[in-house]
Amino acid sequence: MTDETSYTVLIIDDHPMLRKGIVQLLEFETGLHTVGEAGSGVEGVVLAKELEPDIVLLDLNMKGMTGIDTLKEIRKENIDCRVVVFTVSDDDADVVDALRAGADGYLLKDMDPEDLVAKLYQVAEGQLVINEQLASVMASAIRGAGQEPAMPSFTDREKQILKLITRGLSNKLIARKLDITEGTVKVHVKNLLKKLQLSSRVEAAVWGVKQGYK
Image 1 (cartoon, rainbow, N blue to C red):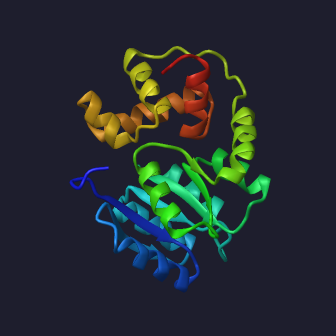
Image 2: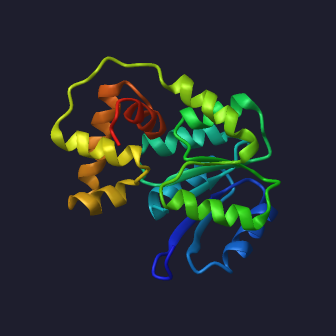
């Protein structure tokens, strides 16, 4: 983490006091900047498309559009951002559902503020983040995601991008590394997921690691 690097954060949570608390917490961080906050999933998807944040901090249990549905919609819209579910639920099924829907992290709201900040930096830099007590659940979810699709035929560029996905790089970082446009990366990622018959980057990354794309 360098002083020159700053990541933008969008908060989607239907509790105003919690949103305010996170905004105040991030005000002390030079490398994290809140660009918006939404009180519903519908509003959150609109803001995510408009603001294109680096990180979305997403509540799971919201009135109306749920966190999982919001996450699926963000992924459907191909918005290039890291999505971290931030919730009070430590239910195994919720963790598995979130990861399979394409979450880049799953954190509990009772964690220390300093730990939350550290995890946000980690997820922005490409890591999958999760509370330690949920690690075994994550391992189970990844094993479940490892349903083996038929071995597809990839182009050389798709192989390059798959390797970078397994390393946790975002579309922006992949585009920069390969000296191509972010839009081109998005098209390749979409094609990769279609060929693999998978629905999320997490599943693609797990598949890639198993197949030696490192």
